[in-house]
Length: 488
Image: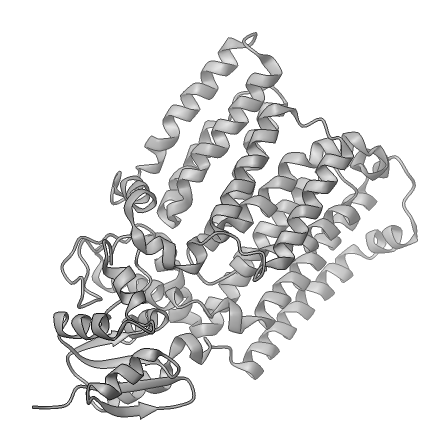
């Protein structure tokens, strides 16, 4: 942080610590949502199996419907990290790791904003953005890439603004990103727009710098292929977007729904209104980058973090230039107020108080609440019943129960690995079999996959079809039902 005042620097540090505690505490308190994604279960299971076997999978061994089909654990590093956090801390460990990584992304954002803006304004902006990121703060691999995306974007755009060559060690972040999550191709796009921003500034006058940027861009895909599976993650990503029919049925891959996500819509419109009304001199390269990020979020709601996390990093220098009274330079030029002087003089005891108090509060909360995934996705009771009663054969399961089934060692009919599996007409048929006219299709799927028992929500229409087929209701609670195929 370009700060010449010790008082100001200490105040900014304490403010960052408070942001860390407040936002981290919020995520931990919201554990039911953070741990509520069904894919969390199978990511932990895959990571555990990688650790225990010392090998990465090449075929599917977790479903009966696609058993033996090619499958790679392209996000293996994230899965290992989640498995280790679960091994040593249970669900508390998974929750704390998720919260720490998510807050780290927000703190990186705060640090970037505070390089140009008043720390209080930067801190309030970071807290505001946190509310927009909350829907995607889940215990899933993409989370580990959020700090990387923030830092990578900041370093490249700052280099372009300074008319400098990129630092080639940043290619290591591309490699790390590729081993953590399949969204690593976003790094290519970020680097491309940063290059366009440089080109806009220097045109063709600084050819040595332009050549270094071109070399960096060419090396990005090669850095991503420093991966146990080589180029497979790139191939899988391209195939998924081009031909996988399942993507149209999975919520996170659906377009932004203004009725369900009305807050995101309102704040997006407000953000665009501020950008337009402020008359920021962004230039055409950054404008195109903002349009691209907006397109990604509108097309797939899972990319909401791309827009709200990266946009402030890109526009912060222009806000400081357009509104000097809100800039860091203006703040540093003024005398410190009472609160800032108080924070500076008592920096060490305040920092210790925040740190120790946060640790004690979090430990007490975790021991009291004992966080765990919600029953809506965990399905602990029906799965425990199935295990205790030795239900054998192939299961027909609801999509959101697939992760928990894998976690408990039961092969699934369908689960969250649709990026590689359950291709063709499989997923549309699975979805359509649960509609009012899906009885025949459901019966055909039961026979084709030799289903012997089912695990479905209580309100699933297919339970009624099973009644009509003469299947036996073996288990029922307020959320789920299990039916078993009649013998003979």
